[in-house]
Structure formats: structure tokens, C-alpha cells
Length: 322
Image 1 (cartoon, rainbow, N blue to C red):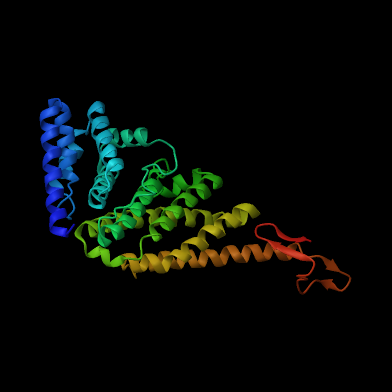
Image 2 (cartoon, one colour; image 1 turned 90 degrees about the vertical axis):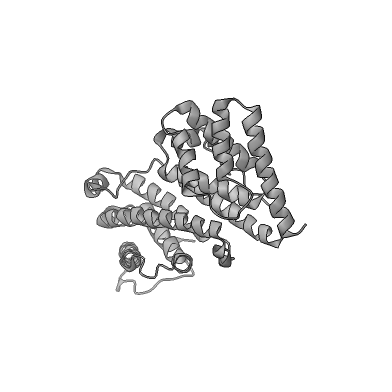
């Protein structure tokens, strides 16, 4: 089937869905479903208009049953569709709810999805209509995974406000490291974007990347605050904590090249990347000092080298004999 015919078929499907929602449902349900359907059409391949998204957000702004109905219909449409454009628009609408929806709407998303892996059930999504939709299917899977990762960040301690220094001092080292791990995981997931960056020429994908870019910058701000706070505690970290810190810093550095390419943010906090690089050096310096204190001393004075035949370096634990 050619592209024009598929577009026409998509338009007809959208019209039929709107007619069914109008004729077969109660007046209240109709308003919920129609708002979601208008935001997640098969055609055109553009992001939904801002006014259409605002209609969805407004319906579930305060009233919990209304919010539940909106989220339920949106997730059902997302999970049932086999069309890449509809799936991307559903995810984009979900992203807007998470970014600027009311607390009532956000709570309904958490309740509807639950604490499970593959929360949005899209890891196997495939639209085999043509090569373009096949390529876009990878973007659907990636975008869903990014949003799933973001759902785990809802309960992090807010450290980027005016009182972030005081807040940071009250949070335990274990909590800081756990939160840093979740945040770094988000950056890693963002870096898993499809290699077909040329798809950003599609308006819908371009809009998605704008939103993900905003999330990325916010995530990096949260990470840098935690790195700075952990840096103040570096000498008091246990070997295991020090190693966890080092692993997180290493993962971030491995993401740098990809995120700079994705978001063209060569300035992105050059200072932020400098902090990450310097902190990794500081952590490695502390590890070396601790390891040197564990070296055996013979009659001729301290050891001057390592016997790799009899010892193995275990990160965070120093040298242990074989």
C-alpha cells in the first residue's frame, strides 16, 4: 500500500473513532476520549497542537475520576495501536502529562502503570507498514523506555532548589548514591536513542527530542548537585561507596560524546563535564592512597611495586591474594 493510501486510511480511521466515541459513549466519557483521539491521530505526522494537548491536561486537572478516565483511555490506545505515529503521539501526550500535568493526573499514571518492568508494554513494538514506520518503531521503543525510566525518578529528593545545600547535607550518603544511580541510568537510557538521527527531520520526532532534551538537562543538574555533595564527603566514603561513585562517574563520561551529538550542547555545562572528570580523578586518587596503605612492608621498607601474579585488584576492596 502506497503512502498516500495509508494516509487516507489513517484519516478515515481517525474519523470513525471520533464518530464512535461521540455516538456510543456517555457525554462525559465522550469528552475524555475525543480529547485523547484528537491528540493521537494517525495523520498528519506532526505533533498535536498545543491547544489539543491543553484540552487533555485540562480534563483531568482536579477531578480524580476524570483524570483516571483520561489516563486509562490514553494507555489503552497506546498499548493497542500498531501505528508508529499514533504510538509516538500517545507517548508525547503522556510526556506532557508527566512534565506539566496536575498532581492528580500524574498520580493516575503511577497507579495505572504500577511498579513493573516494561511498564508501557512497548519493548516489542513493530510497525511493518513500510521502511519509514519500521525505522520509527525503534524510536517508539526508545521513547517508551525513556519515559519508563523517568517514572522511577518521581520520589527523588529535590536538590536543585534554593535550599539545596542544606537539603544535601541532610540526605544520607546511601540515598545520594542510590539517587545518582537512577539519574545516571536515565542519561544512559537517553543515550540508547536510535542511530537514525536523520529522523529528527520529522516534526513529531523533533518535538520529542526537544522534550527529552529538557529532561536531560534537568537530570544533569540533579546529578551535578549530588556529585558536588558526594565530593565533600569523599574521604568519609567506604570502599564500596567510593567504588559506586566511581562507576557512576565513569558511566557519565562514556555518555558524553553521544549526548553532545544528540543535543548539540557543546557548552553543556562544560563546567559540569569538567566537574565529572575532576571528581573521577579525585576518587581514583583516594582509592590509590587507600590501596597504598594496605601494601605489605618487608624488612627493606615499603613495597615499591605490585606482584600481579599473587594478587588481584578488586575495585573498592584493594588487593586480595589469589
